[in-house]
Image (cartoon, rainbow, N blue to C red; front, side):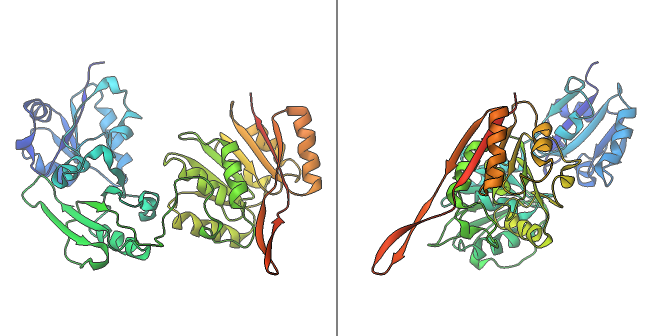
Length: 401
């Protein structure tokens, strides 16, 4: 089928800034879809206008009814960069589309600030929790953040200040590319509330004070970064456990008996497209996991409050499963193993002799790797020091072939 659906990026400079090809596609469309702002920017056109409803998906049946007839969808900037393009390709084959993008908000902001876009962290906070920016708050980093609304810049300033990064420089870029464009620069800790256009992008240059609350990029975050009641996979064991789980882009983890949520949180920190489900039986621990996930920048961690194995029913298929507690409970290991996709990894840590005996049996029947990890920490002994050994941890790792 020839392309019938046109995705056209439009900026604040409106129809006059579009290419002749984009203008022709809008003029020839029987149906023109877009936000009310986009439709107004496009001026007069002969086709039927359709403002995006809420939810957005309610417009898809109307669009698909016109299959084979010319339809134009207007979007801000680049429809395939935090835009509606990827959503539409789940309904319409890309061969049936033509896309004419305009500069994205990120491109415009980088151009105004003189920043190399490839050296910036690009993050959309539109429709997402503010805390998702936390992993990007690294010393000397440059960040371009697409705001949710006019309140986002002030919230970002408060977040930076609370994490001892108040000297960071913010540039609020409003309504870029049009007659209302405005850039406002200020320090995070001197942010002065003022009317801000809802359509804005924030450029941030991170200045971290000594002792700033920075999330390291390596596995094995300090234990004190997590709120916990002692039920936590300790730092050195956690780093080794993450290495055995071997996170890969876009994969899903089950963290069974999550405790503080440390394994699932660090799994998600390895890549922004990773997913994790923390399964925890105790309500107070489940609430604690949610607080840890937010403070460390992965507020979208899924939390299931319940006891395995019953709580495992209906979960998305995992690419990896970690069991840090309850492995000896009836059926948990079998359910986890059977749920894994091909090439999936099962990692189980055990400190009790009973669970260790079970892991030895599994190792003998399924193979994999069986190791014992033991950490000793120096502590005072009178005027001297000694090493105090922690409980040894047996770790079984198996890959499903």
